[in-house]
Amino acid sequence: MRVFIMVAGAFTGAHVWQETAERLVAAGSAVHSVALTGIDPDRPATPSDVGLETHIEDVIAAIDAASGREIVLVGHDYGIHPVLGAADRRAERIARVVYLDCGMPQNGVPALAAVPDQALRAQLAGRAEAGEREGVLAPPAGDEWERWGSTDGVGEAALERLTALAAPQPLGTLFQPLRLTGAVAAVPVSGVLCARNGATIDQVQRLVDFGDPALAALTEPQVTFFELPTGHWPMLSCPAALAEVLLRAADGAGHRLRPAGGETTAPAHLRPFPMDVPELPRDRRGNVDLYVPEGEGPRPAVVFVHGGPVPAGARPSPREWPTLVGYARLAAAEGVVGVTLDHGLHDIADYDRAAADIAAGVERVRADSRVDADRVALWFFSGSGLLTTDWLIKPPAWLRCLAASYPVLAPLPAWGMAGSRFHPARAVDQAGALPVVLLRAGREAPEIAATVDAFVTAAADCAARLELVDVPNGHHGFETLDAPEETVPALRRAMRSVVTHLAR
Image: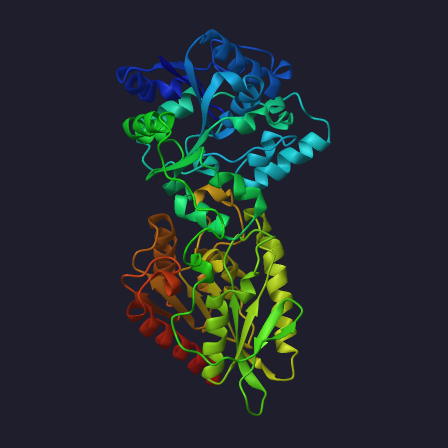
């Protein structure tokens, strides 16, 4: 008989698995929902006595009790840390490890690194550095669970029960590093991504396509992926669908990722720009590349800001991607200087650094003698949409237009940025007369589309100068994903609108 050993995330206990477990049992499997010491009420302990190693031992005990059975370990959120620790020490007993909407913990790294709320993570890191390692982290109140992940799909009653049964998390479980020998690397793996929490298979494939060697292991044949259209707690929002996915994962089914460079066609970010543009050479200056039209200057400029996060080792770097270069050359064809720019958005925690890189790059562009320093536009893409915030707040006089293509315009739930300053919808009422051109993808991912809708509503409420350019059948990254007849008219309209604002 197959047995699923399930380990819950921070603050939560074995009770969260009840409905999923019932469905797995009905399908003929055995289930053991691990009661974690110091969190589950039937395993009380003094917090100072509880660390990650304690929970690893809890999982090992469950593995040892499942003698002679095919074992599938399931770790949700924090639960993946004790799951991996136990699997590393009992690798020969484990048929598969399932990562349920969680990160990829590494040897020597504590679970603190996976705390999604960036402000809380920094606060806890300070406590760890000060030697405060024996306390607890209070569980979220009813309206605070979103700081730990999207509650999409979780009903009011389920959320109330989750809150009522939540327990303080011993700090030792977050501060104690995970220790792995490497044995767990041989165990087959499945990842279950929760799309409403901001993670999709397509996004992971794009990260792999960037060529980051750290992600190459995700393309191994023994690694599969599933996606659920729900928030961070699928055992509460869709237990039947989760049970079905877990059974399929145990059978070795699921989506397999393509290795970087393994496609017969280029990955999306390296496919050709959909328009014919002049083959102007690039002029590299620091972190910017300029594409300067022939003729006398100085001329207005459009600075194109790539999205992200993009792994630091991605090659070619974003400013060389065909889409960004195509936009820059299209701008040059309209008589203005087109600029592509690299910045340091390599991780969700890097928005401050990326903002500084962009500001420095823009000043480098404005200082160029071929550029009219008083006539500059900024054009943002995808995840860099949050970086429009600084430019919406009291925009400088030289900023004549701000544009964005399929942008993310509010932090997604899993990004842990609820208190962040990077929130364009809250800043648009300070944009004054700044024109904003927004290219909107009609088939955008729902979680991103919701941020765009909120921005559009906020812009209407404050009578901002917002121009919407719709691509009704367009997807996120539509330039290289969708038919040119769908995208080219929108690109031409948006570019000419931006250039018109620069000329005023």
